[in-house]
Length: 74
Image (cartoon, rainbow, N blue to C red; front, side, top):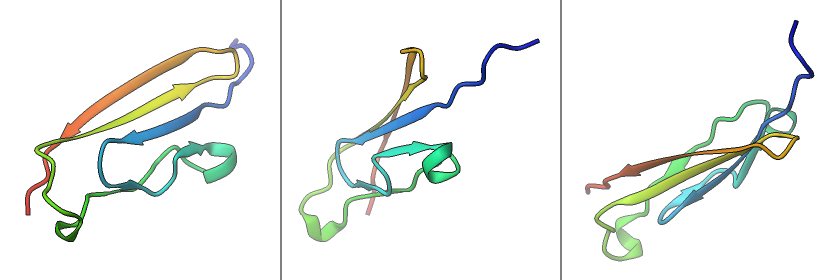
């Protein structure tokens, strides 16, 4: 039917703010979900936009990525 089942590991990056985990995998975190927290107003001026990237890798070296730009408003 299907070949071997592979585990995906996702690395997370953001140009501002914080991510709960820099890496998620079902073996480590049970899901690939993550939590993003926007920068606080006390951290200085807000950036006009924040880029959040997720880079997924499989065990054979396959890679895919997704980018989302978000705008932070006070």
